[in-house]
Image (cartoon, rainbow, N blue to C red):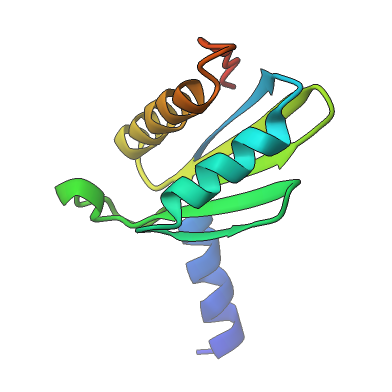
Length: 120
């Protein structure tokens, strides 16, 4: 068996099991909220961020869960919106991560909350 073809097959299988949702959250404070969220989650999760972009890895076994794989939240700050993308390995994980992101964003954006999430 060709090892490269085998790796391509595994990547395709993993990607076909991914569940994703995106939202554009209207706010002029996207960079501020992105940085607050990332700093908050960096205490116990794997986080990378700049003022304009951040990623947070949610382990598959977070809070006693047992999902097929890790989840990922990606944030990109724009002038008048914060773009949010959540990638998960199951529909249940996706819904849980969408809820966690929305609750935490609303907590940091309490002056604007509740923020509008147009999940797609």
